[in-house]
Length: 169
Ligand code: IDP
Ligand code: MG
Image (cartoon, rainbow, N blue to C red; front, side):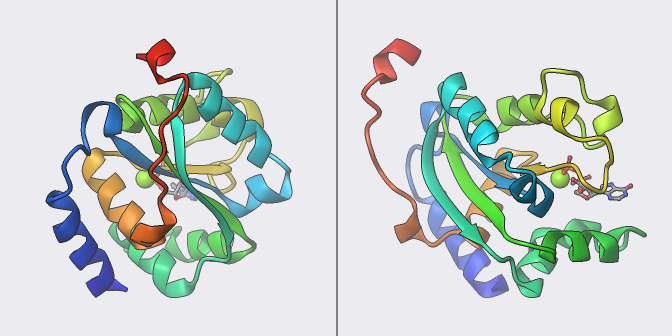
């Protein structure tokens, strides 16, 4: 898994156009979001904002995948709880594309702790506890590239032209 992520990251640095309107981010509806039937609502918000969906799958995340995904948090006291939470059911993994999508998605999500998330944000509207905060989103372009290569194979990401592109940009 590590090797695959590393190789994909290296190869992606040579892919032109991961900036501007082609910026991409990794978003996941966590197991609580799937159980609580929030998938449609979350997808709707990203579509309506003007972002383009380029990858989506419902999947059970493996221990290896989650350990790699959250490797920066491995020394945190809540790490084991976080692993159990993320393994507790299927997640919906997605890749969204568009101008400043990484930063904008974080704004749309709200803060890590739902109590600090403003109403109108996803976490501010749909959850109350940090340990059940319904959505993940990459925190930088660099982590987005790493996370996308970890969760998706190249052939699972679609290249398609959105018919309303000129009304968004
Ligand atoms: P983020 O999801 O907003 O980027 P991170 O700091 O990267 O927040 O933490 C990853 C995830 O770990 C959070 O979304 C949340 O599910 C969980 N988490 C973070 N802090 C705590 C905590 O203090 N207690 C329990 N779970 C936490
Ligand atoms: Mg994070």
